[in-house]
Length: 115
Image (cartoon, rainbow, N blue to C red; front, side, top):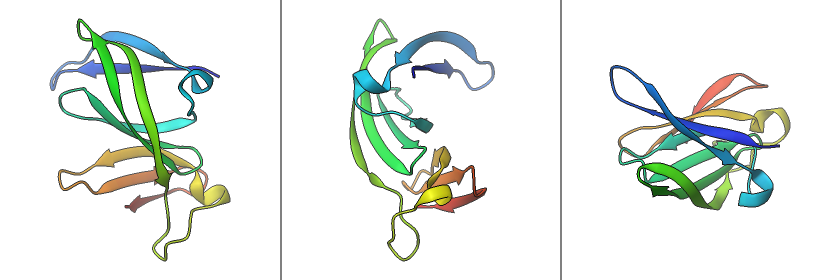
């Protein structure tokens, strides 16, 4: 399965600026559900369908994404340190606060969590 990453810039209006094919087999990770891109557009943090987390960097040519590198960081855990499993691991959205706290939304067991 291949997905496209689409980025839009601008506080007031958002314009389509391009896409980059995100191929799980080619880039060695997949099932990305939520992504947060740094203010400068160079780095990203992501969560996947099974609670996995990633961080990476975009390669750009003339402002357009032409490649990326990423690394697996780990799995999301509950408040007692156990890895989320089954329906509880289905992360869908990610927002990162200025203090670095991750806020993750989940799909199959709908909820939000702070990490």
